Every structure is written in structure tokens, then in C-alpha cells.
Image (tube, rainbow, N blue to C red):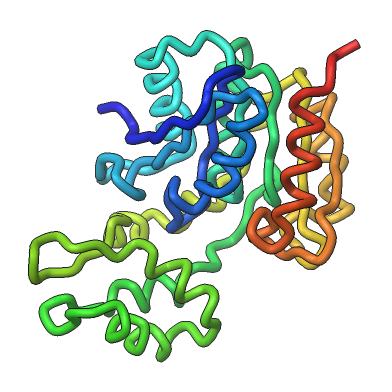
Length: 258
């Protein structure tokens, strides 16, 4: 089973992985912009997300292997890899397992450490949506308000809504499996996995996903990594400060290695 993806532009391949409960469409604006600067961008839906296949199995090792199958299928021998949050963890695992394929690695607001489950309320709210009675995005938003107060978070989650049939809505994300496997989302990178290539970790100034204390552990896995901050941004740093995120990513990718 090959992951669903959308391609933009031509040039150096750049594969982008979205975060938990997201999808490739979340990165379309960034993809279009950077594809105009000499990159062949592949926006990828990870398993149980977006338009990719659903599976009862869910782990970072499996998602790294999914990405490898996609690379082989597309004939990509070497490429840049960018991942945000859960997608960043997948990218780290992939770089640890298939380091020979990764030219440069960009990780957005996630560290290789373990994170305790913290999406329970969101998953509970999405599970509670009854599409036998919900027939519009507005109705779904109203139902979610009981679980999620932040408008921006609800809007992000409701991008998963789609018309399964002419009269029936559904969610693209496989909520039942993702709820059961919530612990796996926080999995730490194994001590045996490391990547010696160039890596850039971008953290949001207002986010606590990457702390100063994480730098030592991070360097153990990625000895040639640099950590930079995206100002005036939280965990969704690519959306909250798209200009600075683009500039830092672009300059890192085009910088010639000594």
C-alpha cells in the first residue's frame, strides 16, 4: 500500500510529513511557495490520515517503512525531508533507519524524546461526532465546542471532514485506531537510531515541545543538528509565522555543505 501524496514543482525532491490529525493539505501553501524555488515537493498523507490507507497497526517504525516504500515507488534515491510534530517523529525514525536516503532533515517543533499522551480530549470530541445526525460543518463545530474551546484548533480538526456520500459526512482520519494507539504518538526515538547528516530543528518561541534541556539528548541522535527559534509562534509555527519558517527552511536547504 503506497501513501497518498500530491506533487508540486520540479528540482530537488523535498518530502513533507504533517502532524497528528492533520493531512498533507495543511502544507499546501508552503509547498507551492518553496516549489517555485527549485524543489519538487511531495506532500504526503501518513497512514490513518488524509487520503492514505487505514490500518489497525500504527507506530513510527511502520510509518518510516511506509515512507521508504513511497520513496522506492517514486524512484527517489535521495531527498530532503521535513516533518512537523508527529510527522517530525516519523522523519526522525526514517532518518535513523534509512539515513543514506536523506540529504537534509528539517524537524518542526518536536524532539526525539517521549511525550505523554495529551490529545485525549480532542480524540474524545472527534469520537463523539455522530454523523447520523450531523449534516454540516457548522453542526460538527457546534458539537466539538463541548470538548475543544479554541476556535483555531476546531477549524484545524474539521479539515478532516469530507462527504463520504452525497448526504453523509465523515472524517478522513481513522479516529478509532488513533484513539487506541494514542500512546504510540509520544514514542521516543530508539537509542540505536541516529542521523549524522545536516539537520535543522525549528521550535516555536511560544511552544514547550522543544526545551533548552532537550538539546543534549537531541544532539546524541543528531550530532550535526542546529536548533533555531521561530518567533511569535507556538506549535503550529509554519502557520503562525510562515514567512520566518519559510526563510529558515529555504536557506538551510540551499546552503552548500563545506
